[in-house]
Length: 115
Length: 112
Image 1 (cartoon, each protein chain N blue to C red):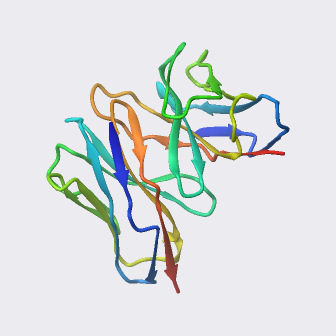
Image 2: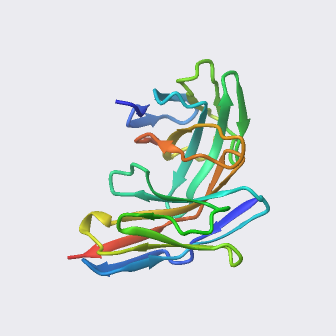
């Protein structure tokens, strides 16, 4: 089955620790995205990548880092510099169009809680 | 820059009735797309419907249709014959240059 997987489903972190959220897709999509969802805030873009070994900051990149070493994988690291990391994190992927924006398909999400 | 406004935080509808969810947007892009996504209690984001801004014809997908008013920058979603499984949060989004901007969402409850 083609799709996007995220792991783990739930993640607990102590203050001061870095944690890495996994995102893998087998849809052969070039573009991948990370969003953060907070109650009443909708989805906010953290980072995105349109090609391997290249990525761009989104609207709320501070305290986060990413890598894109393989087309299928786009892990997100939440660093200790992120002031309020407790949130629901969603990964998505899409084709890259010449113009406009193709449909983004989402993974099931990871719920991160800082203890 | 793009912005999306969903001014109604919550709505409720009786099963089998019709409901319309409102969305307005602003963008400086000439080539853009518009989307409605559904997020049920499982929190899985699911595409409901998509509209290319250059197309005048309103998109439809079974019980879901949109009213796209480009000049007014309005993109409302109509759900016909509402079903209990339609209970979810609904997000409007606009996309350009491979990026999506989402509204804050509306919680829709379908009453039996």
